[in-house]
Length: 277
Ligand code: PEP
Ligand code: MN
Image (cartoon, rainbow, N blue to C red; front, top):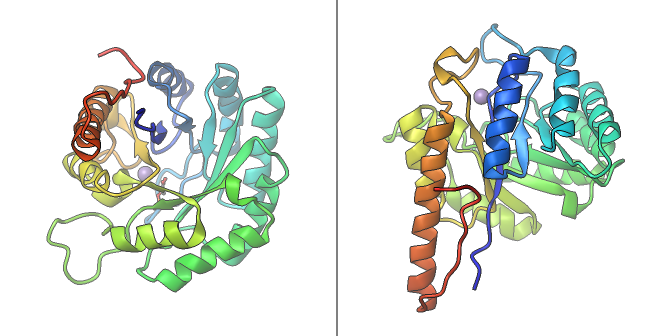
């Protein structure tokens, strides 16, 4: 038996410079992640660094030509079109991910970004849950995205927790509802990944919550990893260094192999780490 590998979307909170992108691509290739987070536009709680914007499209193209698949969050449909067209024309077989963030949701964005993503079969759309705790609203997000024409095979859901109200004993930045996420996965038949960075909110909690989420049937993880987290222009306190991320992956894989042996009662489970230990 082979333990299926989980999808990994990994990279900094935001693109900041060419050097940062090149280092990210180098590290991501070593691990063999499916998509590299390379966001150019950032939703911000308070005014601050909003991403380098359109100017960064050439860096997405450079990364794609180096053999990785960029993932980017557009603020408006026009951004989605710019990023997707540039990456798709730069490579023959490369893939690209557009994602809709929790703080930038409305039915117009959902439908129109879906319409754009649906134009190219090498593009997938990932959509996060909204910030408040409500299952009906989350269902609506999926319905609006599907109404834009994206195929179910090209739509991925991402749980990033809900803004805390009331009890939050673990002090997470956003509180996960694993049961709701698993119900949404079941009801929609869509892949469901987990974002430990925007749920955890600090390095220590990101590591802890990844292990917690790994006990559920998530299909992958979206993780913020920065070449020099302390210098990051956004979300500096929650971004992992690459060495921390590799250690986290190793411990997850070890746990999964152990669990497979226990559950299936055999000693032959194989799980290859995508990088040398
Ligand atoms: C992000 O992933 O960059 C982000 C802004 O997160 P969220 O939309 O979940 O707040
Ligand atoms: Mn972030």
